[in-house]
Length: 484
Image (cartoon, rainbow, N blue to C red; front, side, top):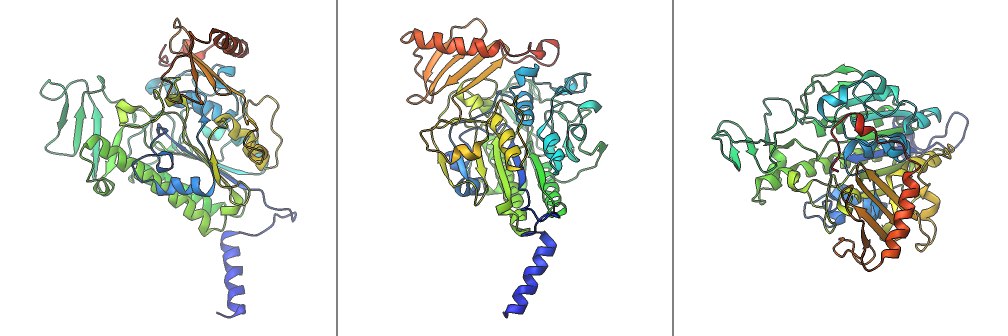
């Protein structure tokens, strides 16, 4: 190919995808920012975290970016964790301590407090186009709508979950929790007239996820026929294409692998070797999520935006093992608990050319840090009241220099604090504190409280000081209460 043809092709690609271009003022373009948030994905599920289900696309983020093994969220369930992610502040500072479910989402006043500015607010003011695609769960009434919280565009749903396909669930296997099987018994039952499996192992019925909770574009319900993981990926690809010539913030909040468990037939066939249908459905859902991540990354490559895009992959909390078969290994506990399995999550950053690829094995980071990191990347000044730190300069420092010295949690009567490698946990309000040395016991199997009472008192004092700065827990006035 001659030089002239190469030049023409280069100019064509630049015109189509806008890469390599400067802003109107001639300045270097601001980076794009993408948050990919998985729902209920356990710490030990992705391949790069030791999982046995192939996740090559998520693994590629870890290979080309930095993978943290001590990455935390601020709550062990969805809404409260997302409130901190969106504000860069402990959600307990403004009382968002509950997890509204079902009809509670639509009650007046239930949502991210209107006085809190979101990352989307800040980035839009910095010149970014912003979109929330997927799950919101920070208020189901008009004042809390994503487009009133800084997002230019919204496609998704407002409550805690949604079926992946609508009735009659064609082309999918659907696993549903029930209290009683059709014959009145317990265990599992498979419908002979449709691929639906009932299981009583959780002791309760499947939540009414879709009631008063439509898939929406902006504020208008849409008749979405595609599998929801596919639909969210499609919308993310389209947003990237449409906004390739301007800086954008895309918050892609998949509902996978959250229940209800529904797996498309072609993905199930990939895992025909998994005997347990419960685990097979989960594997299919995770594989479809992983493929979605790959399509988003491919769209960035097609538009020449990889080096201009900070990509974050994180889960909102640990996995609910009994419900989904999810793995948090080697950690103790899972969703709803303040042991490591509930709050330590897959946590990956990729920004080619800016963040060196590698693995952070010891240094602690938090979802709180993503807000100031994104602001700094965008050239905006972080607010002093944020609880996170900019990760970019700290990643360039020696691995012996801590990124975060401490992290705190409060969920009703549950409480925990980690300071350096020491952590105390109070599983219930009237329980004694338990003490763990995470450097030597990441699985929290050896309670050292009786052997080191001074360390317990030291950490308890730090937690009490922090707790005195927090607001009263708002879950007392509405929503399903967290575990005590």
